[in-house]
Picture (cartoon, rainbow, N blue to C red):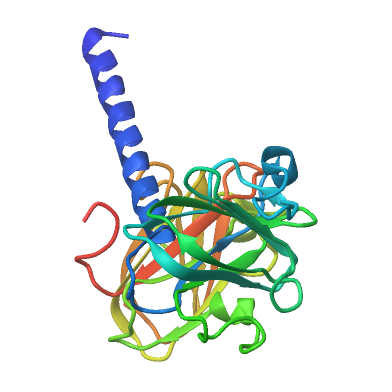
Amino acid sequence: MTPITQRHCVRALTMMAVGTMAAASAHAQELNLTLSPGFMPDPMQRSYVSGGGQEANGIFGSDMRGVACSGSISQTPDHVMTLTSGFDFLKVWTQSGADTTLIIDGPGRFLLCDDDGGEGLNELIEHSGWVPGDYRIYVGSYGGGVHNYDLFVSELPGSSAPGNASLPDTSEERHLAISPGFSPDPWRVSFVSGGAQSASNQFGTDMRGNSCQGNIATTPDHEMTLVNAFSYLQLWTQADGDTTLIIDGPGKFLLCDDDGGSGLNEHIEHTNWPAGEYRIYVGSYSEDYLNYQLSISELSSTGPNR
């Protein structure tokens, strides 16, 4: 390899690493919270996926009340909650269609854990005397696996909590029906990539000649209904690994991408989207199951690297 070729390779690898770190940073900001007394909206909500390869009990044992910490959690916190000032009262709860657990690891010896303290298999932690600082929040899976959940934080004792609100329909949250001018823009949702089907075998190449890649689920991860036609739409992913993206639309509409975004993430832009049903698959390039966030926008000024 010539010195010039070597320099080009090093530069390309450096740019890829910077892009990956930028995507990861943006994703982390959307999962984390920075709160001061009187924050809005209240409750504050974040959505993500529970579970991981670590056992909470082996890492944390019991919390400062003597409650056992349980569930399978990730190596890094799912959310970091930064309190810029002290709070007299805060409550944190989850809503999920599966059996999850909750661990909040705060400044000093602050540690609170819960399993099924909310409605059904959901968690609820209420506490007074929260000091300023960073609180690392883990949402675990009690029996292993990964599950969608919503995390809520409120400083209002009477705000809506488990028992006062029905559990969300996770499948509905992963699907959307939109018309031009939809809000919020970008629309975002988190889920888990991968499956037992080969996208290449199922779809081959898309209408631009791009090969469809990755292992995908037998059913779409998301269904996007365009109530009216769009002159422009873009979709992109942010994930903790190598994912792929397939959009299967009306007629012969088919778009596929692998690594068209930042680093190993995907980015699809297209004009002239006809009204109708679009089936969206987020695949895993390897056999892994990966957490990801999908964003959809009709604004060309938004999106990765803009």
